[in-house]
Each structure stands twice: as structure tokens, then as C-alpha cells.
Image (tube, rainbow, N blue to C red):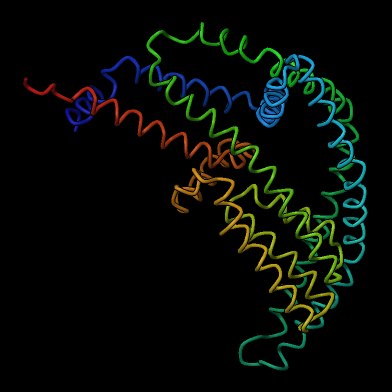
Amino acid sequence: MLELITNWYRRKFSDPHAVTLVFILVALALTIYFFASILMPLLVAIVFAYLLERPVTALTRHKIPRTLSVVIVLAIASAIIMLVVFGIMPSVWHQVVALSSDMPEMLSQAQEYLLALPEKYPNYVNAAQIQSITDSAKTHVIDLGQGIVSQSFKSLVNLVALMIYVILVPLLIFFFLKDKDLLVKSATRYIPANRRLASQVWAEMNVQISNYIRGKVIEIVIVGGVSYIAFSILGLAYATLLSVLVGLSVLIPFIGAAIVTIPVFLVGLFQWGISPEFGYLVIVYGIIQALDGNLLVPLLFSEAVNLHPTSIIVAVLLFGGLWGFWGVFFAIPLATLVKAVVNAMSKQKSDNEQVPAAP
């Protein structure tokens, strides 16, 4: 066994370029794992810098200085963010409060329905089981309400930290966009000279991450917007809140859509019961999810769909467990990174083993 491991190590890491690549990946992973909370403003700024790089580049192609292009793009992006914060978030918060106040009535309706089950199916359900389920549900709802209140007070306490983010993140985005080439050139000074494989993987992943972030934002806007229009036409309660949840659910591939289906169907069920309106909601919501998974995602993430769904789910669970939200958000790029590293090292091995043909 030891000899097998030794041979594998020599075969894979005899090349200094492969050693450099592994060293960089391990160093980045350990840095993010142990210092993610400290580096959070930096990560947020990097995401926005990737998102805004293309419009900045488009303006520079029209002979506009890069610094001025960055200022224009940041001003437009800030206006859009302010519109979202002050235009959509108050409505979302109002509907969260309304849903919290309506929750006891919903629980009462659910309890009445469940208590009628022992009479209909006495051989399968008894009253003690139903009472236990309803008591547990009430406890969870009370804990959820208390958690929302405590989180609100905690947000007020962290208002100073939020203001620091509001000032620090835009500054970081500005300098990342303005001095992009200078920062990349400075970073390469600290990387060993044997970095051909690392450069190859970086060139591929730089394009992948940029396309992924931009595609995710577009997907969130389209799915959330279409869901809001559909929910409003159907007359579904809490349409803004539910459409925001549906839009954000695309951040978690496969799993997010399954999770957000529960509140959408529960609200529709409590509002309409088993009725044609609820059937229309199920059909419309199913069409939205089908179009997202079979049309929108392949168009936006042509490279990512080459990954098997099992690989994506494993990546979500693994990287989400390691790095929380950012691990889930970058699950597909990270899975693509693993694939790119494996392909690069395999190609390197093939090149090293290739024997020149005899003349």
C-alpha cells in the first residue's frame, strides 16, 4: 500500500508546475476556511467586480478612460441597488410581518383539518399523534418568530458594521476595477515561477467565474420577475415575498427549487384550499421551474451544464458545509475548478509520458 501511494505521489507531483498548482489551491482553501468572516467585505467586492467588469470593458472600447468608465458603471449600479433596497425591500418586509401575523390563523386551519383525520381514518391516525404534531408546529413557529425579532435587534446593533460595509465595499470594488491589471501583476510576484498549470487553470476559471456570476444575477432577476408577474395575475397572497424567495432559490441548484416550493404551495393551499385556483398555481409554478431548468440554465451556463447533476449536488453539500453561503453560491464554479484541475493534471501527465515518434 505504501509503495502504491509513493508511486502515485511521484507520478502526480514530480512536475513542479503541478506542485505549484496544488500549493496555491490549498493555500486559498485554508485562507478562506479560517478567515472567511474577516475577508467577507473582500469576497463581496470581488463578486461585484466580476459582475461589473464587462460593462466597464464595454465603455473603455468606446475610448472612455477606464477610471471614468468605472465611476459611471458604479454610479449606475448604486442607483439600481438603491432602487431595489428602497423599492422592493419595504414591500418584502411588510409581507413578512403580515405573514407572521396571519400564521396563527393558518395554524388553526391546519389543526382543524388534522383533527378531522382521526374520524375519517381511525385505523391509520389517532388524536394523540395529531396533537403532538400541532404542538410541535406551534413551538417551531414561536421559535421562528422569536428568532426574527432577535435578528432584527441584532441587525440594529450591527448597524455600525453595516455602515462600514457600505463604505468599504464600494471602495474595494472601485480599486479592483480601476487597477485590475496592476493588482493581478502584483499578485503574480508572490507565485513561484513554475506556474504554467496554475496559469492555465486560472485563465479558464477566470472566464467561468465571470460568466457564472453574471448568469446567476440574470437568472435571479428573470425567475423572480416572472414569478412575481405570475403570482400577481393569479392573485396569490404575499406575491412579492414569495417571488423574491423563488428568485433567490436559484442560488442553490436543484435543492433551492425544492425548498421554496413548500412555502409557495402552503400559502396557495391556505388561501384557496383544494380548488381550481390552487391547481393553476401548481401548473404555473411547474412551468416556471421547467423553463428555468431546461431553457434558461442551459442558455446562461452552457459550460456548467456539462457537469452531472450528482456532481453539482455533491458540490453544493461539500462546499456549502465548508464555506456556508459562499460555498453554495460558488458550488458550480468550484466543481468546474476541480474538473479543470483534474483535466490539466491528466493532460500534463499525458504530455510527460508522450514519446517522440521515430523519424
